[in-house]
Length: 637
Image (tube, rainbow, N blue to C red; front, side, top):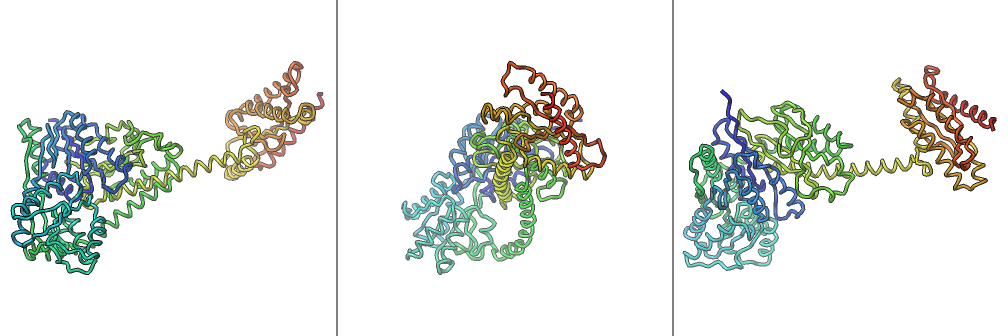
């Protein structure tokens, strides 16, 4: 009996909402039937203080998947934060024609699993007013456009109104989720003699912790005012004082998502809307000192810190190794080779199934202005830099971008693939794929990897630009300005390398051919130096056309050397004789100008004439034969 292929589900989320995203995905993974679904998680790390170019480039990860190849998609809106991002992603999902589960936001045609922020927040507000007599309150909001933050603000207003209190606009501070703004604004207010309100109600736990720090940083007691948060974060639970907050129960939202998807796949009626109620969790920061056994929790957290630091050190060292290999790469092929070697085999921090996919055009971007590359979108194809599945290397090359991975695991255990974007300014280079590294969502390791890789790409590009510039300068230094063949400097370098190969017994057979231009002085005296330069160029062209596949050098004013190699070496006698016959024909043609009647003396010596001979001896023999040919040519006048 054939095993049924697993379903494929695309998930879109912002990794900066790390802990909630982790709880949600953990709730999903714990409730999936065995060997039934693979999740492809596309992660952005957009924040308000990022630049517009960076936001657009990292956001391109949401455009990466071809949704026609998926069975369903999930849009996790908490933390997406940006209206433009949500609108673009919503339009993409609408066009997909597949079932969509939207977490945290209602949209026509999507199955919506909402979180009743209002209920938990109302419980919190009623609690601090009724149990702790809070009357004056400042609300520290997220961003003006964020629906979750606004829902929390509405709950506070309603609670205050129900208790005969009012919240003015001046009592609302929009932080844009940036804790630095809290330190700047409220640290300054406290230093300027601000009268503290009874309570600071904050839109998340991090903002609440920042307010608490503002007290102690400015010499105030930690309990100078009630401080509450939202999210029930691990950090907030072990903070002192532990943050009174609201648990959004994302694990339950994840369980409900799996239930909805299962009904869809089974052809049953799945609810279009469902709300999960939040729960208020009192804490020390609101004055409830014994409700959560916080000391025990802090002890557990303190014990886990060293282990977390140990593991972070291991991961960080691997990130550093990746960055180093990218920066030290000398070209595109070297970059691929270094990364492939680094991530070969299993057991690394990246896991046994891991991929690095990059746009093959990256081979050119060090030499090309980045503005000439497509902006904020993925190329149609990706080159496989690193591919391993279950600890074994996967042989792959360039694949269609819509394929996403160079191999497939259609059956077997469920997996979560995490897609992390790589980019350079507006050029979206590619993506890195980690497998079953769910804990990395919570500790922002994906974002750290993204930063490391993208920072290294900047250095790699600069190194490639310097290499290209040095090569160009070297080419200019080694090029003869009149004839554009290689000059004496290039000849000396070539001979030095050839001598090393000869000493090691690694040199291919070659012949040295020396040339000296005849009648150059007569042309200069009769027709001028411009005509003489033209005469030199025509002589050089004849030499180059004779030994087309060999290096030719101008070693003096009227002297040239060719090192006949490969096919030119095999046909060396025929080629040299044909050149001499050509010159004889030109000399006999009185209808052409003296500049056209080019005459070049030549002499050739073979490296195999005397085994073990040094280059200088071979050259000397060719030079002697050239002078013999010169005397013969002038004796025929």
